[in-house]
Length: 346
Image (tube, rainbow, N blue to C red; front, side):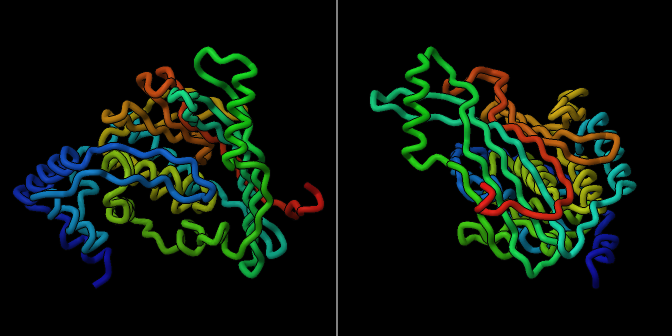
């Protein structure tokens, strides 16, 4: 029996089962909200953190249910995104389907440029923290011929802003200390199938091609593989969707399924009607994490269903960052390139 047939058979969920799942979901959210550890990693690993508390009772049973199958799960059984967010996401799904994906020839590369700004802190010898924003640009080249290596061009990180009353000399010393600790400088890497730093790429055209295009099955799969990660079940699901969309590798049909899956996540709303990144305008769809007062946004161009960026917004001041700070933000541009940079050209 294939997944679609099984899904049809279980579509009519008894009210008692639905109530049990809903209660279990609430118990799980309460039990596993914990501290989040933030790190600045050299690899392009998906953002994953660990809950500090275990699963108990009905919550554990629900987690087991998600592990057993991608079909039986909580996706679509609870109220999803707000009506406004659902409308934007479903419209973006339709626009995505109507948008042609870039055609990459055997001698060409899919070029994914990501301009990013992110927050960081540095502990000083006197025990105080220096809080700052830094920027960098990553450009990933994925070959049309799978036998050729991927190329990753990483710019040196640059200071954007320091918070607090630091003199220019103190700011310069802080940046010098960060660089001495191995803070990322300019790099040009190449590896087969994106296995940079010896680690396989999390998302590849081949792995993404295997994902279900049924939004409910897809969302349950995302819930299942993220058990034990993130600040909340639903928040991590949205982060996971944002991470896939940010790669630039999601085809039109997968982008459409991801948007429809996001529309089933509770707490997702329209957070800003007009956002401009790199001269492009979009609508921000996001979800707030009450535990640490942050909001994860995906910024969508409603005209073509493309993700133009994402951001994580701090809603209350913390660790030296004032409320309203974009702890991380990206602008993504996807094009086709005929060549890649070489070490001699850098």
